[in-house]
Image (cartoon, rainbow, N blue to C red; front, side, top):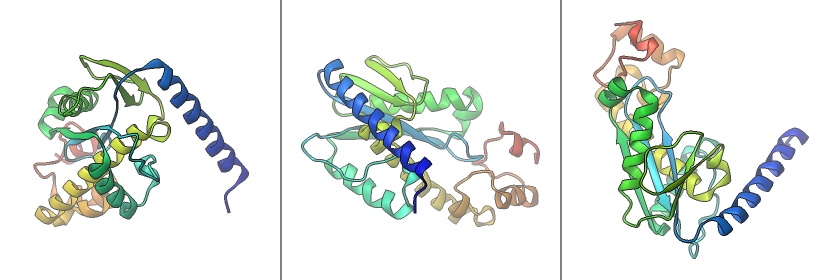
Length: 214
């Protein structure tokens, strides 16, 4: 049973989403693209970004912040988004770029690449968070956008599933680290594996827990 506090927060979020959709209808004429990322916090692997332009005629039920969905639900929505969106694009910034630029700038780079990879040019880009990549189209940063804007929710799902799949592939190469389970995050299991085995080539060697074992 949900608490009154959580129900109230959900109602407030739904109210904010309605206000934002109403504002965007008047604010922008043309296609809207939603952008989000996955993989800023982990200790290994690329940061992945996605950009999505939804088709208003093909409603996708159940879009939400990817972190609020089960892995199975994300996988199903991934396929549905790819099938029903007007267009979508997935891009990344590599471990080397993260180490050279820093994680924030690498994230913004991945976002820019995702937008530039769209087959259709959006009239406006809506980005989750409070920072914007350098783009040649109008853009707006929206805090909690992955819960407020369906196109950003869709982008968050594409980015999260893509990175999780990458972690499962990496697990096959380096099973001693347990990437399929923790997805690169600094869990107790991951930190113990780092201490026991050192870093693999896909670990981010500028992140403090990795630096500590080098």
